Amino acid sequence: MRLTVKSVYSLLFCLASMALAQAQPSLSSLPNFADLAEREGQVVVNISTTQIVRRQAHPGFPFHDNDPMGELLRRFFPRGVPGAPGGEAENHSLGSGFIISSDGYILTNAHVVDGADAISVRLNDRREFRASVVGADRRTDVALLKIEAANLPVARLGNPDKLRVGEWVVAIGSPFGFENSVTAGIVSAKGRALPQENYVPFIQTDVPVNPGNSGGPLFNMAGEVVGINSQIYSRSGGYMGLSFAIPIDVALEIQAQLRTAGRVSRGRIGVMIQEVTAELAESFGLEKAMGAIISSVEKGGPAAEAGIEAGDVILQFDNKTIDRSGELPRIVAASKPGSKVKVKVWRKGTSRELTLTVGEMQEEQASSQRRAERAPRAERETPRLGLAVSELSVEQRRQLGVESGLIIEEIRSNIARADLRVGDIILAVVYKGVSTDAKSVEQINKLLAPLGKNANVTLLIRRGEQQIFVTLKGIGD
Image 1: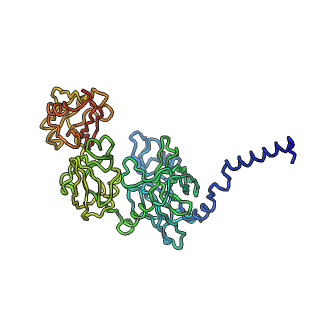
Image 2: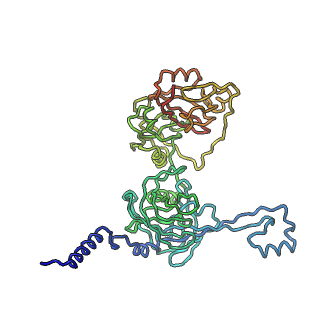
Image 3: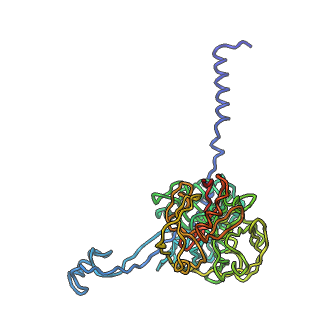
């Protein structure tokens, strides 16, 4: 067959088109959320709340309550007159939720209904109902509502454990009051711990979520609810690419207790913990960084009664391995108060097993705000640590409830500058798994003197009401 120039160009064009088609994903391979949104949108509800706020009287308002001019101003400014005397005003907020039973039980976030005097639920078919709060749990941000209705569509619930990072997920809610808005994204991470949020292993996504989405469902591609949209990470107040959802299995455990008892019962053991870093693992003689370090133990608490001490590393709790410290609060909280559990701890280079009776967490833990006064005595140096410290006075030891310690007066070395603060109390020094109480400046200097130039030393620090471990890497001569 004779090939012409034209036929050669045609052949090359066809080959290039085929290669380009193979290199680019076809539109049919992209997910289509239309059926999911149409089918599952009927279980999503809009929640609006009203809170009555009492305005304080303003001393500069020139009219009395019975003054005709004051009444006239109040008629023209029903939301409040600048400088007017006290009265009542209404605050309104919006959120989302979803139906979990045909007789009207609804899941949402606790912060959506917190402090509400009236709650209105609007269904997908535009019917509106007054809702009552069956119970709310601030620690997990889960609330259970009830409306008087029957034969309602019910959300299908999935298994968050089967979610995979990178999997598509869909949120339906009412951002800024725009009902039944659908947004989509992927699972960015699982089991995410957030600051001050120790009881929820959050699902992190990049699904666009904004104010008003709170309490709404997060769906997998099968149309099953796998989470409750709860928080966003933002510096502007709006969505910035990070959103977090409460796994539905956690929410269901909470709602079950709220439905039966109206409150949530959690276990507690009375300890403060922190993460085991690679440096801390080396200091404590662990082969790898795992577990949760006990930085302080509550006197007379369940952990103290079981023989757990500050400096112990909890490796297992109730036969569950603790890989990261954030796992321990969730496991302890899920334990039944009064139950006896086995606790495996690492202490001074060896592991041991203790038996602990789980206590019950109170709704609000009261904390005193004691502050140590700085000792009026000359500072003393610990050159190896790059610190100027002084010994605690008798009164300071009494106030802090400690037998000994050194207060940091000045930080003179970059070694310690990142993790230590002026006013921190050094309670003990840990090196290769051996902890030594900090009783005097001379004692600490003598302890550090024989250590090598690149030695890593861990300090047990008292900071306010907390105790933490801080590792100083490569202390100098």
